[in-house]
Image (cartoon, rainbow, N blue to C red; front, side, top):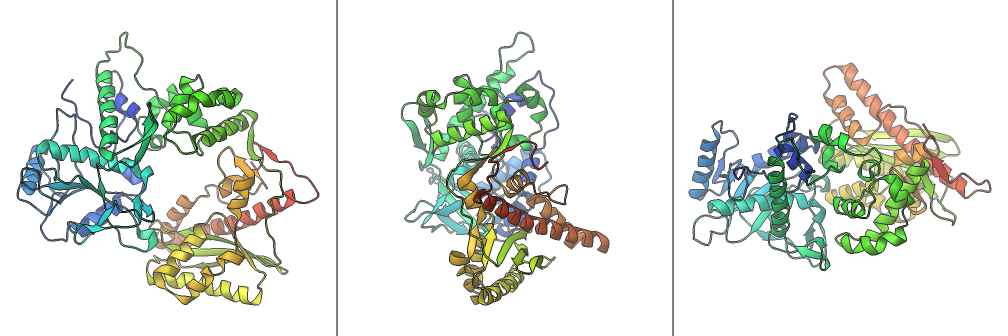
Length: 571
């Protein structure tokens, strides 16, 4: 039993998955760990980043080494022993005492070990942003991909703590480096996040693995700040315990499993879901409340208070729960608000209500004689290829699109945005009463990104319209309604005014697939059909925004509207 090992993903992953994997009484479904990265769209990004690093001097690239496991380990040890600047795709020796195995994306030569031998830092590549602004922050460092060992300060930025999973993987590989004697004397871990959506080339973000900045639950203090290594050690120890308990099962008079299934994000790509789902009550909180869900600790706290299902939370007295609940959920900001929101959603679900107004004052959505509803579409690399608008004035409503069904990164993306911006500026000049409506801030974020990246005066000028001419409709919905399935445009438009999309599968991710077909399908007919599908979907999005505006305005009219929408509305 002592010889088992866990990979780098185990400490950040679901412990039920670990239990199932080591339970000898279960039939194992086909497992494909690459499915997770594919689900996130990260494989291509990782390959591109590692290929750029591979062009540096002193790199040993072991990705293509087709050899038995022992030879791959020997090759990695030889590369580190020789002091290689970078080792890509190396397989580290097993740490049987620590129950670890691992293959980091890369190892970067850092400060020597305490013994004076070559020391290394682990590196992971992730398809998402890992840093955000914080004035005065000075903990992070960075390196360009063409000089990964050149570590520079990275002021006024901090690591996005909710991307903790990548840190746990780095800590796992750090412990493996320690076990084989190649851990640098400076405990750093590197993440290459995807900054492409901000017009920047990806670079390495270095994190001190001993720096305490991750807020976690503490039985004595409510919450405590811990380092990535401390968080990892705790989670890894628990997974080892879970695996040991699972291995002891025989199928005869076994005690209940030490962990029980809870629906989490990971279930979407986990092959064990078919085993876990039958064990979850159909009314389980983790299964039914999918928007702004409570995390595992919050759910476990409610379970300890005898609340597992939506029906039980709907009937519970939150005021009586809070004294016992809050001391155990101090790791979360706004824990009380999150519980109250979950309880409201539970009551809505129990009553068959999808959308409920929570305000008494007028909603006050501004209106104008010239209105523009705006929605954009982007490719899977983040570039915007379509700016779609619905123009409403005294002549009626008509849909316009500014689009290029080609890969539009770089100058071409800016040129397309400039075409749209010039049209909007001309309209604002001739009709200064114009208002532009968008649902959430994604459109304005993209305009500002392109303006700042290019310095184009037309794009900078259109950004000046944000204050007086742009209206974020989502803010009005958020301040006045709660939705059992969140407040996304499709949920609100379909459940509120009863709007319906022409496409049977509307969605931003699907539109990226259609775009890929529009630019890369084999036949002209397939490309034309995909292009039409994207344009119809975008037109429906802006018409849905108008429908929501009209619906909100009606709440402030003399004719009262129903403020609770049941589950059958709009279907």
